[in-house]
Length: 206
Image (cartoon, rainbow, N blue to C red; front, side):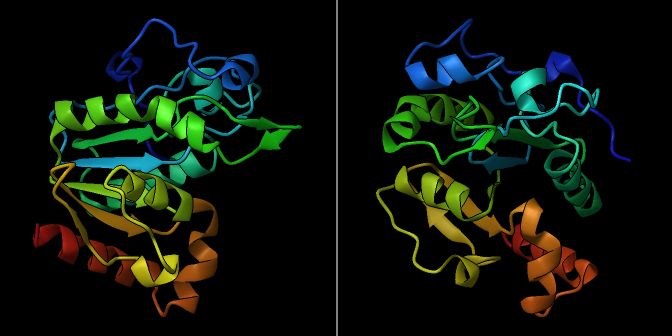
């Protein structure tokens, strides 16, 4: 079991945000980034999920106000980072800080919502100046690369292939989305241990 993050590390960049009316209506709270501001790594997801208020403390960012604090994806990503040896030096955030609701589940954020929230992610990367940014899944990777006006063609081919982003001043390393990690690891020919080793090798080269 990984440790639940200290709420004191919540990096609240604004008291509130009203840029996206649909997200304001859907969210319980803003899911801000969290972790040390001198972190070596930044993990970027796409957006918080609905979460579950009945599973404390891992209720999800829509309820905790902190990215990657859900029972499943949150713990899985934090366990991966801990197994890599960066438990104390990783900052977690999302490209969009509010839950994009579609019925009782998530939808993909719109381009306008991504653009509205982009300054928050830019601020975080400027504050932290990490060695690398780990993007979790296709949508998070596409979103970060769009900040450099770059496209992503074929996500699975990009997994573990570092992408230099000079405009952001970072190297982006795409990882499998935690929800699909077990399914795709074997299909890509990795055990979990081999996957960790490959990530470590890429980070060591930065």
